Image (cartoon, rainbow, N blue to C red; front, top):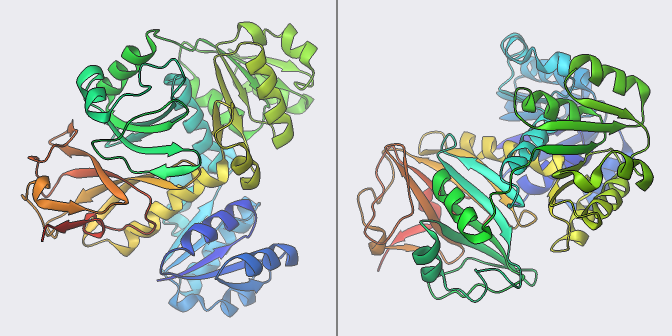
Length: 453
């Protein structure tokens, strides 16, 4: 499968980095020589230096036999033009990054008129992830599956947690029908089996039906923590989409922004939210605007350092839920496992959408990847796979199958019901199966399941 990526910034690099781990022919185009040099030095992909919207540059990338072009430059107009030219030159599928709200509201028109296969808006996707975290404040990450019938959450185990020193069978017996499907411990990733013992300091990925996840959280934490007042640092695109998604909810949103024109736009567009003009990195301003009485603090400025420092200050003030946007992957890696509550990275969120689409393209006739989420700094993938008639082991009990050591069948969605499977459960055509795996490039359930010898 041949893929061309136009744009080698954070998102383009992130997509190329993930797809280069799979058996794909990748070419990256960028007008910036430094970006191209970074890609060439670090990834096993081909590169082209040039304007991604230029007919000549795209022709040099041999678009006539390209299966997919992904346009993710900084400029929406370039991405849309690039996709239009690529289609004319023979690219089969095209994906455009579209960030501006006025363009994004015309998504269906643009897709039809330009022949786009998909549009991706990292800022809106990030806002969606933040809103899910606000809904489940005890979790550091939340991912919906099977049209929200199932959920994946990530939590940290404290010293005084009821989960400390608990075995997995004991967890299910005491706290409900959920499954621990991946664990991060001392920077190592574990796909746990039945004899696994949970320890303080572990980060757990847990999958279950929505009601069972909610029951589990209430049982473990005791308090039904609800976020009502949210203080947001930064009024850019993510704040715009977050305000739009929370319209009509009972959440009270206050945004601190240092640009006057952005403040004016937010006030005019969302008259019900409070907008404060000022420097949110000033602790006195944060105190004045009630950081210590806020249920949640969300730092989403364009500066990673500002976001990290202000988040740490909010935590020191006793804010229970703190969400921090970080753009640079090396900073995410350096902060992994520390005291920061929840980290969102737009490039990673966009990449998981693209990877899901690419794998579904590769696998169109066998099964469909319905959802894909990264956990534990992209070391674990939680994947929802729709099972078609070609599944080799339809109707075979799970106890008669061998599941790869680097994967686990977390749940089966059968007739709209989320089932945490036992050895007696079977998988049939039409089911959706959620798996957790450390393996890259999983396309079908057959990749991680074999018949017992």
